[in-house]
Amino acid sequence: MKKKLSVMMFTWEFPPRVIGGISPHVFFLSKSLAKSGVKVYVVTCDFPGAPAHEVIDGVEVYRIDSYKNPAPDFATWVYLMNLNMQKEAAAIVNKLADKIDVFHAHDWLVATAGIGLKHVFRKPLLVTMHSTEIGRRDGLHTNTEKMIHETEAWLTYEAWKVICCSAYMVSHVRWAFGLPEDKLVMIPNGVNINVYNKIETDLASFRAKFALPEEKIALYVGRLVYEKGIHVLINAVPKVLEKVNAKFTIVGSGYMKEQLLNIVRSMSLEHKVLFMGFADDETLLRLQKCADVSVVPSLFEPFGIVVLEAMAAKSPVVVSDTGGLSEIVKHDVTGFKAYPNNPESLALGITKILLDENYRNYIRENAYTQVQEKYDWEKIAQRTKAIYQAVLGEYSKSFWA
Amino acid sequence: MRVILFSWEYPPRVVGQLAEYINALATQLVKNKVETYVVTYHDFLTGAAEEASGVKIVRVASPVHVNIGVLTWILTLNQEVERAAANIYYQANKQIDLINVYDWHFIPAAVTLKNALDVPFVYSVESLEDHRSPNSDTPYNMSIKSIEWLGFYEAQKVTVKSQLMRDEVVRIYNVPKEKVKVVLPSTDSWIKDVLELYTSVAGGLDSK
Picture (cartoon, each protein chain N blue to C red):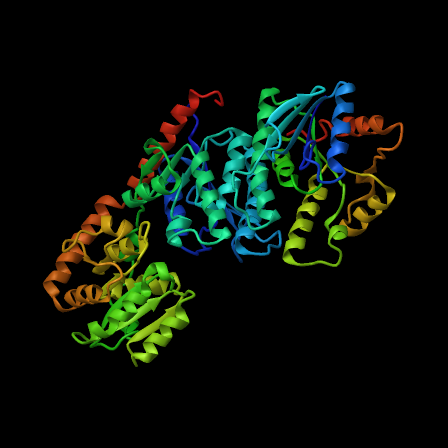
């Protein structure tokens, strides 16, 4: 019998450790790959209470000690964490009877572990670039940013294939690192619809905790940082309130929080904007179900998984027309696309969705159909598996095989 | 016997005493019929590879040119050390008897190669962070110390150049005394001592 294709993934976050979008991405991708007959190993950072080794739906998850070495700053911590991740992964692969066929790294945060193991075991490396430093910072301004950029360039250079989650990211990554076109592959992010279907339908008492019955709920989910454009939404709040009574519910935290609170206070709108901080999964899923509109006002957005979640939760969406959001949403069909960095435009979209019930329902249904057809994790896993097989085909003709 | 030496300095790149020592050691090893490779840092003063007196030298540089400190420079350079060592390993039909790593810089690579490919390593101490930066326990110093600790923990054997250093290694890192061997470069038996040590370590990892 032919041996099962096996992959080892490296990621700095995996549930229950959740920092950004990489954690749910690797969680669903690895489970769906396992379901499609791939043997998947995930090596990730530890988390209080999570076991060092466990099997989740066929996925072998190893959590390594990520704070073994003291570090002077975040970037140095990343490389020191990689030192330990590489050492532990080396021992795991060495003990396996049939080694690993491919290594798959997610972002620069696991670059050095992946690059080293590629050469030591002479197996192909793939990378998914979820974001870039030059995009996050809108340029490279400090030595830390330049160092991270060069690490990303090195990782994409060493990778057999570079996977991006949107056509926008494909062209961005190609520009940022000067990569040949045939090295890049677009496979979108997915969304899990089932988690929303499992939620109870009567959410009136849950909703009452966040808004008055006569208030519509406008939901923002994301870090409170510049690139996410949360300040644009805050500036749109008074313009929306001129037309419709709404409560703006903000989930997430970040360095802009104090600034944003000050703006809200200066407008005397504390009773209309609720800063919730980080929300647990149960609360977040229910909020997304309750939201009369979900707003994604990003200035830079490689993909925008939060908009897929809103669409799966049947919450109508207003997004800024940029990056991955531009590709996911079709204007006036699956959502409202506002001009980026433009509070008037954003307010117009929010108001239109909240006031026009026919428009709202039309968008909601179209969006839901779209996520089912295009952003299903099992289909995404199939496409990823096909890339692994294509790379292994090339590899078999190389002198490493 | 086939041996790889890891050192961050090697002539013509001379930072301290280590460069000349590695040069003398490699030359003597070749004279004693040990196939000897040196993997070292390429600072662009010389070509990337050369053979001098039978010693095979591979020089590597970090692909990350902008760094925020010695640590990030070293930690990105280690993957290139791994790549160079892996190339030697596969070209030699997977027959490398041991790696001898000098000081902390390339310990990460030695540790990975040991865990991945079962190639044992000897950690040779020129100096310790505790002595270089006395009374410093900033995260920067502590992270270098943690890499030194990893080297002592994962090495098959440790060599030092004096009884004093042996006592210090035992005192600071709680390394079992019998793991630490004094190899004095000044004595007539120097290369014989090194070869004896290498022989005791070669193939020393429990086979799976």
